[in-house]
Length: 78
Length: 351
Image (cartoon, rainbow over all chains, first blue to last red; front, side):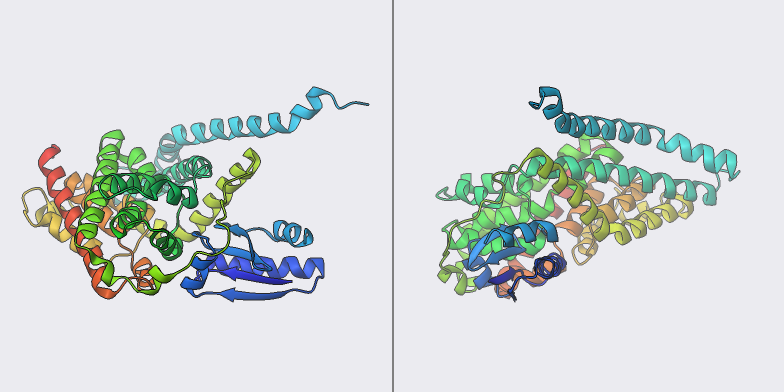
């Protein structure tokens, strides 16, 4: 699984990344996490509110810093 | 055994019952705030409230609690209401509208759409790349920070509905006119070219579909916590400065420099406000204290708007999509608009 955090680097996207790593650790799944800060690339995903969460190239959330539990739910669904 | 209607209804009763209780507690705290501090500081600690120290300390505690309550109340309500609105839906509404109408819609939507300044760049690209005119997008970007719910909440609590209504109308007018002017000046060449070349691939996510009431209220709670965490230093500094002015500055001290008699008052206020970076919550306690010391409302509103509308962090972020000339134009036109509003209000409002 490839998880991407979309955000220009403000506190919210840092927190989302932290929560995402916590969720992955709690599930024990294999997942690669990367952080996209280039604005053109972020906009190309179709989101207009950061931070955004992308799992395997599908946008699952935008504009919210999800708690690790919610992220774990989304990951478990795949 | 089948689940009875009562058992199924319980979570809802808990939710709405809890909310009713919260509103009741809030109202009690707000009403008894001032008398409480008057009693605690005046009668228990025995500070004379007419002295500088006494009135300054009283102001500090009373204002802190009052502003915190106002912030909690308004942010919760506004976040829940805004959870029904999304930037994606705003883009859909604005698509295809021409200038003029588009500017007015964009400004109005800028106020009600949930939006933080770090989203300014993706939102900008999202609007422009989908064909919304530059001027219309600018109206949205100006209205959003300029007419913000924190300022509305605090103005309402500190000065009443009159100045609040004026502020909202003024902010909207500035956003519409500034965006329209920028559009007419045909400044598309001052936007970084990659923005127009961005292909929006993938599906557009609408982040507000499928949210339950529990979700929305939870978002309200998260937003209150997040905003308070971000602004509490500004708030304390603002209230502290306000308390100092309240207790120690002689009457009419500031009025000499920026009072109704000084024709440059508004200009000065805006020039000081533009480079200042603060949240509305930090500026308004200051504004309250300065108003008590005789500064006219128009000048103060101009100062507040200049501080919140143009923030250095947002401008730095926007540099990724706007060339410096456009940023300068954007700042310049907005500042001129605010100055005009300041003079207008000073002329219209009684001292």
